Length: 159
Image: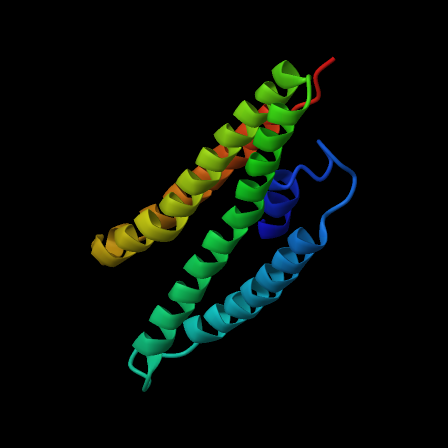
């Protein structure tokens, strides 16, 4: 997921067929940390909640997950800034303005997706009665589906 968000957010296949060194570094760090966090979360889910340090590790892993989500936004902001500067320099302002508008929509969608899947789902999971905790997973999966469909629609090929 994070790889796709970074690649789309930096305009990899849309604006340029390469990534800048800065984008590559951010992507490498985020992917490695996110993979480690996901493995650690799976291991943590297999231990008993009453184990020593379980709550501390759970909170620390959620914090690292949120930091990775925020780090994903950095290349998107760089791309938006680059498009803004390019539209001011070049005479292709109309085309660049369209791309800039598209990336701003994508940025807002990513922020909303991160907020819903990381914060709202966590709060639902913590506050719902036990027999309804499955609703948090349903909400998360529906949000993911809507995000993927929206991203596909936003970056669909146009003739």
